[in-house]
Length: 95
Image 1: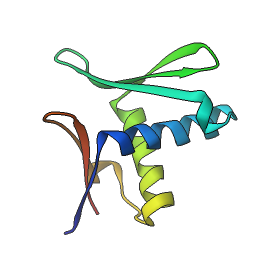
Image 2 (image 1 turned 90 degrees about the vertical axis):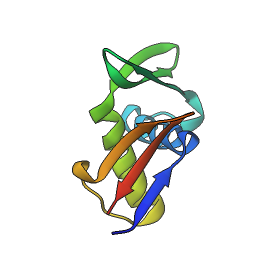
Image 3 (image 1 turned 180 degrees about the vertical axis):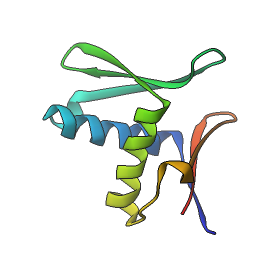
């Protein structure tokens, strides 16, 4: 199986594109900050038009799946995506 690794920047791009489409705003209006916490796991804080929203890991994976399909032409499923933390957060997709 081939594995694709998305950098932290690509994960942020995926979330920006996903949220811009969902909220019907320009992608430039979306800001994202990724984080990891021992208690809550992976999350993303998203700012759109001055409002803040938190995404949990499953929301992040949904954005990554859509990004993989639109940008790479790869149709992956939730079980194919694994978020990892080393020096930065990355996503490993095995599809």
